[in-house]
Amino acid sequence: MFGDSGDEIVKQNAFIARSIESNVAGLIISPAVGTTPRHLEAFGQRLPIVVAGREIRGGAFDRVCIEYEKGLTSAVSHLVSLGHRAIGWMGGGSNTATARRGIRTYREVLLKHGLRPTNLWEYTCPPSRHEGYAGMRQLLKVAPELTAVVCFSDLLAIGAMRALHLQGMILEGTCPSSASTILRRHAAPFPRDVEAAYSPMQALQP
Image (cartoon, rainbow, N blue to C red; front, side, top):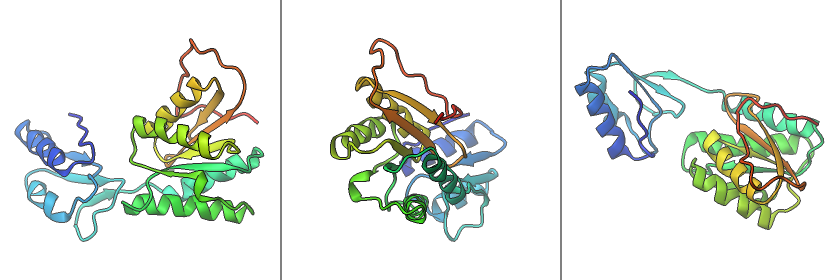
């Protein structure tokens, strides 16, 4: 079974209850924002639960972690090595521990390379295609000097690439780590009747 809570605890709990009714052997869950141990402990007594991605502080759950800091460091450094000096950020701001770690790492890596990001380079939002589309349109408007954007999720990247496509720009995507998706764009003609294909494993070319 596969379900999407839309970051809503009520939907998340309903899906877990349905999984129990369906006699699933176990559940891997990326918890909705605001999930506490109390929300999952009752379910955990009835089926094994593994928490992936976000942390739930205070809970004794098996957990799978992603090395966000390492991934973002690799991603931003990769873009710098390609010659990019104006690199934007799209993703969570301070609503989750993961988001806070992500934007902090993005800023730290740019400073390490002697680059100073501005607030105009950052668009904080939930991870959805709609937000990715809106975020890229906003970044293009307020920070036209950007030549690359780091997206914190594939959903954001898909929406962002759609926005670039509609602007008639050529773009490339890559996912050098499990933590982030890279977008690169430059103002060159792009056929408007062709949809921009997306693969998280595409390679950026200098």
